[in-house]
Length: 549
Image 1 (tube, rainbow, N blue to C red):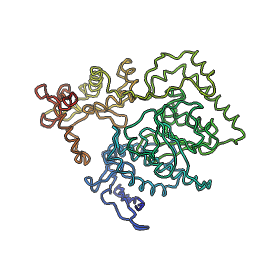
Image 2: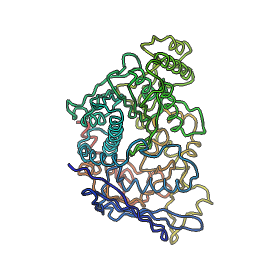
Image 3: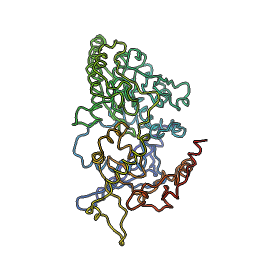
Image 4: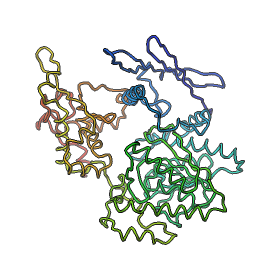
């Protein structure tokens, strides 16, 4: 199989404010061909006065080929990229993060990524998990590519004779372990919960179902590298476990959800974003553990793409005892966090509510007396059975109350606001309401409602996104969804037969929210709306019948 190199040529028409992007594929060394299906333009045009707009144009929307990384989906470019470009172009501040792929050779990364993407692309077709296959497969391919290039360069610098070994703590679906093992690096993955896809990898991919507790029982002296890819409650412990496993053990961690040593991480400063502050915290942990910590940005389809790497120590092997005493003191200094935190019960969609109630001072003090082989007694790994905390299990009447309250807030109710809505031939326009920041929407909800939503992963934003029929949530702004303005994308047109059948089974099985609640009714006619316009249109879903069989 040939390794193709991918490049992009940018043609700028300054006079017309147009930039055209021409993707190039290397067919043979030095010979490139334009990938015509994926040519696109970004245009800047005046609106009125000092207002400008950004527009996206593609040469062939129907034939667009997306891999989620090099070639993103058109819907993402339209809904996310353009708004980000507009934001970046008007901002005047220095980035809080490093440039992408700053620690490795980008040309090597690009070639290897394309090779691995081609090699593992069939994983998307057979993905048995409920998660988005494109996102998770191509993200893990990109992370594996980064690690393989990082390790290749390390192997060359240190003149290592064998490929580095690894242990992935909190390995999840295990795809990263599978790819790294297939590419010749001996290793294994450990996670508290077995996934369905594990059985598909084969015996060469070693995956273990086990809950990891930071202690002398979970050290890995045989491993060259410890990996924490969205490892949640284990994230701050990765540098500690690596440091205590052996002097030569290194770590790679990609933080996602925010955890301290004992549970939920509590912000300490409003001058930084929560993400930047948490990265600094994990970096501090690595430094206190004796590592020289480096930071880099990965090229992955995720908003949390900053990784932290500990490749070397700032002390000699002879100073190990002194360094470990410093680690122990640093960890002990964080025990006071438990007095002010309901951490064990408010973790990010992984841990169950604490059965012991509030943590008292005696239990905190007992942690200081914990035997050294156990490190701490307050750590609690996630439950083997994952709790659903995505607002789906909230009482229906509670959800309907919040939906109606937010919708009434967005719909224009003041006379002066209604005057802004245009009329056409005497017929009143359908009321689209206004767009508001999520923060302003949250301010109108009562304290009890907010407290209840806070216990769900994503809170208010998740609840509104779950009610996709009513709301559109984008870039921390929420608005009423106008279905008369919705257009079908190329992705919609290429849905699988199974999805078409599923949609047909669900047709007219629920009342239309707009027909029932919106002052102007539904923007779509009954024949074009998949929801029932009145009780007489309601029918029983064949899906519910199947589930009862």
